[in-house]
Amino acid sequence: MKKITILSFLILLLAVSSIFAETEQQTTTTKKHQVGVRLGIWNNSGGTHPSSLVDISTGDSLTISIKDVNFYIEGYYAYNFYSSWFSEISFGMVNRGDMQYYSTSSLYDFSNILLFPILLQLKFYPLLSSNGKFQPFIGAGGGVYFAKQSLQFSNDYYAQYRNSDSETDFNYTLSGGFDWQLRSNFSIEVQTKYMPITFSNYFIGEKDYSATTITIGLKYKYNNKK
Image 1 (tube, rainbow, N blue to C red):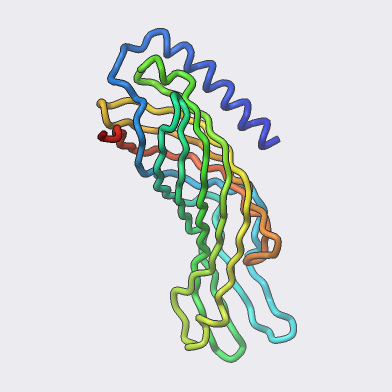
Image 2: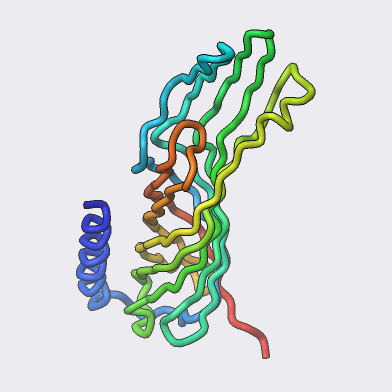
């Protein structure tokens, strides 16, 4: 169902773009390399984390506070290698929430749960040749999803060795959105991206960390000097 919803969105986006293309005025060519940053929300579409865990053998416990909607930031570089085609590499980060560890021996830890998507995509702009201000795109690719328990505070010197949980998943990604040309070298971008993340082992009580992001960003476009 998630994949059908995303594909439907992309088809609708392309249909709407054809209407805009008929009325857009010509602007300076947008066939340029891109670098920028995206800010937005991370919407959980994966599993639900337990609010607490208890080790029956020791009595130690975890209090987990993981939100379904988080702030997301992503930096990227897109290379225009042929006509309307771009190759994009991106690095994102989200703080999903925090975890508190309590032991029966009065030890206390506080950690953040961080995820880092590192992705490589092919992006296609179907209307790039029209030079219109409104430029929709679709993208697909994949990469590495790295999750890390980041220790922030502890009253135990050895906590940094005990609490170093991390997981890695290699998976695909799908994206779609549009650029709105501001000036010849600057555009605003709106994008949605689906990221299926399923770790082979449990990470903080859950394997499925899949998400859909909705972001808005500013990109700078430039040509190579020869």
